[in-house]
View 1 (cartoon, rainbow, N blue to C red):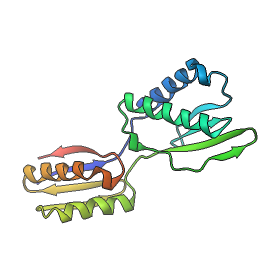
View 2: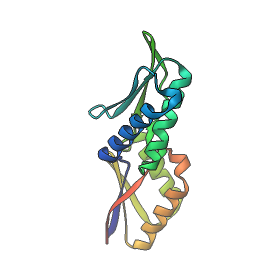
View 3: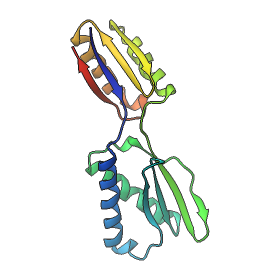
View 4: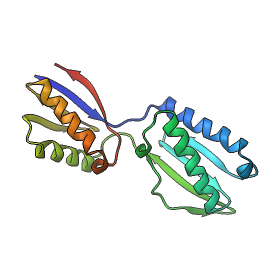
Amino acid sequence: MASFDIVSKVDPQTLENAVNTAKKELQTRYDLRDTKGGIELDKKANTIQLSSENSMRLKALEDILLGRAVKQGIDGTALDFSAEEQAAGALVKKTVKVRAGIDKDTSRVIIKLIKDSKLKVEAQNQDEQVRVSAKKIDDLQQVIAVLRGASTTIGQPLQFVNMKS
């Protein structure tokens, strides 16, 4: 029986490279040269802390970070910019979450999409991944095509790994 796993992960080294290049760009940009605060990566919490004097410069930091992440090959939907801005003294801070793993709600959406496709496959949730198995590899490839087509519905980057025939 053929199978593969659906995961959502970001390479930590690539993420660190993106943050470091964003920091370098922050230092060299003339309009942001005297900015207090900056960009900090917290590897354990899997978050990125942005801080600046005002909301306009914070938005510029978001744009720099997103641009550098995309240039490093990280899908832009892997970064969650939805957190509220918080005033901390003279600085405005924002925490950007890096989405890693597939949570239960997203796995339910993925499994529902697979079942709605009416293919002869089985999908099951396993911790932070979804395993899909079928008798034919062609069915698995159709599942991959369906999920790539519905990437906006899922709202999270997906990788297809451990293909076994």
